[in-house]
Length: 284
Image (cartoon, rainbow, N blue to C red; front, top):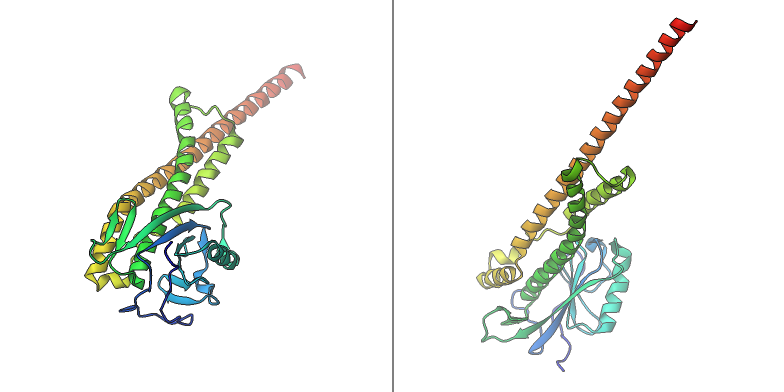
């Protein structure tokens, strides 16, 4: 069994930056990375009581000497963490989370440290030449965003399942078979899904350290390509656009239908009024 990750990095007080150049983590030849999607949003700026290692993104030391990288869009990546580390961190994060998940979406990856192996993904594992802080943060970023996209994809799939029956209704007879109340619930769900998905993490964000270190740029590119972050993000944007257009179309259709019914009621009332006037004219 590999020994826990031992961070020989000075802990900086909250509000200061950490220069990670040349700072190496004392680690075994392999360690595990656990990704948790715990909430819709984490107030990372308020986590001043945690033992901070780095602020961009927020990286903290765990009690058993492991590390955790915390992202504001609700994901946490733990490195060489024990079960007690996980419970400790989740308890501390809970007051600063909005939209806490009942069931966390989890992923785990094995990271192998081998200076002779090309850096990046290889099968189900990720290879690093050295586990310095920048590399650990890059791995955390990719894993967190991939997990986040998985979450969004699963949510959007359920919303897409609601679109097809409504479209088929319109194709068959130009009307909806569901009642107005249920239709409004569907529209509300779609609009809420669009808002929630649009407010989630941006997979295009990158660290400033990538701009000056070619090795980190290459590592990031290989991981990003392996997890298809850009392609999957574009697909999510397309689905969000489709959901938004569908919700708008449903609202317009219901508005037209309601307006048409009102016009019919007005004509009926006018007709009734005419009948009463004619009746009164001839029989009084």
